[in-house]
Length: 494
Image 1 (spheres, rainbow, N blue to C red):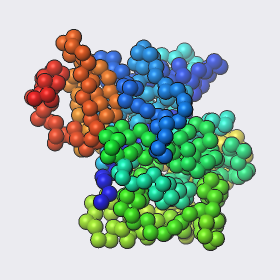
Image 2 (image 1 turned 60 degrees about the vertical axis):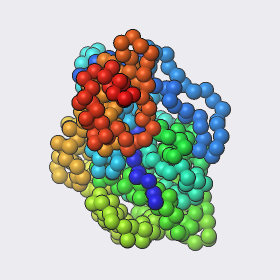
Image 3 (image 1 turned 90 degrees about the vertical axis):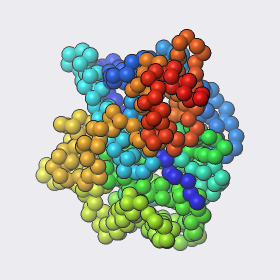
Image 4 (image 1 turned 120 degrees about the vertical axis):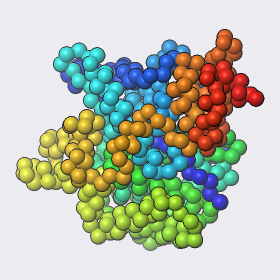
């Protein structure tokens, strides 16, 4: 029986400072992250001791040097938030990692809360910049100068499922799911075949099938083996092949369909061999085909379009779930998955209020027609970028949303609440509530631990190796009966 698919996302945002000829992305990121203020007190370290990014899921350790900043740099680059999220500087980008959630609807809520947090800190940071300059943040994946940055997904999996099995079953799914979760982009990059408009922001940047790297020779399936949980029981599938999405419908379908396929892999329910002859070539070919009709070469000699490959996964998912008692969200994911594929088979433009790449393409084509422009016009490229602008008054996705031309999955009230409230049904609840209640006593945090400095004693680290423990149901009474961090540590020992 597949384990619950606890999941989360890590979104790297594009950043620039308009009007600053000496723009430094790293110092701008530090300014941005530190401009965001919450009520809890204390300077909290991110606990890098709990991380091992060089462990490879294929069973070995990759040569390299683990990055560990000094204490001052650590505090300057990291914020752990009361909603259980991490907001930090990753290389030259601000990154928001949402708290662990148990279902895709909560994931949409918390990923969208991240957008609000980035925008709030951007406004605060702007007040500190010299006159005539302005910080801008984009939820996209490319600076159009050859640099791509990621939008990563994480899913808890059963370690008993072999990584080889995961790769074999997942590769065709990842090479083709962009048809309903691409963010869309004008042109090609990374020496890709010239094209007017393509489905994915990231597809051009994938150069190998399976590897550990996330920044060079990017793989369709990443092998990082860093579970942030009991490694004897769990693995964390770290997915780097996705785009940064703004459409709630797209985020919901992206993670919902993927979680279903992963559960099917654990339960041995992938019953068809959908191997592609060349997955790296296929992901690019599918991205460069907004008609979604192009046939991809399968390993068995047949040809299928990306939509047809996805239909094969959907049919297996419907068979897998036919005799299960499904929760409402899973039922809805299946319905939306089928709805999207049927629309893509007929005419992708039917999804002009649902899927990012189609929404943006429809908007750009309408603009081009009104202004008699072609795909190479600078104004058209600017429109592409403007879709991803996080400023609610300028971002074109948000314009579509205000006009009722973007299908919603969650409410604004839920998103605003998630800025300050952790999910109640994962360990993120314990993390976030500890920050609210004992902020000045929290010394360090990682996904699977939180440590306290109390009464001058040695640091007390509390391990949280089970993502489904530390929930509101588990610890609400404990927190109520622990007025101070010292009481909490004492009560946990009792």
